[in-house]
Image (cartoon, rainbow, N blue to C red; front, side, top):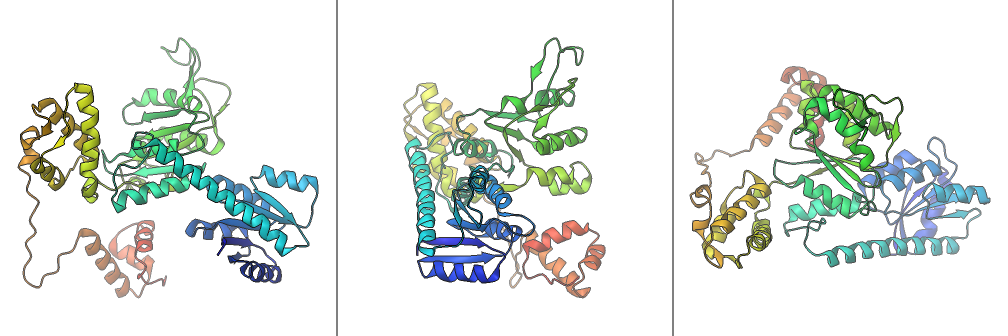
Length: 454
């Protein structure tokens, strides 16, 4: 098989002809009749190339091309048109198309264009892979660890790195959200630009607006000179809004407008200033709960959460603990000018067996302490904190025949029982459970066996 091609064509007869003709030439095709359907499928499945008609009801081929170029720039788009003018070709290329083909079609000629597009994509992926391999294990975003959980995260980062869509990174405190954001930046086409980060919880509310958007001279008492905000400073690069869940409610509408318009108005300034930065947000809070409590705007949540990345806690990737520990050991031993090469067997066992409630940050602090205390060429148990040396995994005692369930499963079973008792009506179930309907719907989306009846 040469590759998978997504065909977007509202003419059923033409679409069937393209499917049959391309499959006879080694391609496996999927057909959709419009741009919205195509985007939905492209978000769920992977394709090597998209072939779209130019003139379609609703979203035309150029608009679809722009959407794909913005969200899935790794997938080349070929525009199919009956109007082979220079203006059409120029419009297609400006919209981000890899190439365009005119009707009437020659399927063998179309196959050659598809072959070049697929090869182009594969070469780009190979260049990306080689760059990452050459960079080694470092802060430029290469994965540290080989657990299935962290490999999934970095595979997703690879897929969306070149997209311009907003990204929300969630995870427990200390799980490495800023590291993931830097990885996203360094693997993107914006890597040559600046990476600018701000902790929204660390800046007083009165100053945060000025930090983000800038201010003009005289805007407030201490504004003796004008100042460029972080949005503009991050132009051609990436802006990380860390701890976005702590953003004051009064500032959230201004942030929403900035993200929508790609412009900011400095405090006290008469005019807006355009910026060109990719915005990544991060939080350890459950923003959906914050929305229900009224402390976070729902429209802002959907604006920053176009692409969601969830980092697993360190306790769920215990196979990565020693790799991370060895890297931190090398860093801190070099700074301390000590020749410490590794860990004794017992020290390594203690590190792997600990639950790490503070995640990667706690591990790093632990290794820095151990290096400072160590008097030998290996870290020993005596160099580790008391809570790690004395840690005992919590014991779970169950009565014979009693099924042990986590809270998620208990909640799932209870909600499904209530839903069944009210005849499958989600509205009645939400009232019975005394929860917001949107909250119930989001939970049911995770449980595919839930009844669909309203």
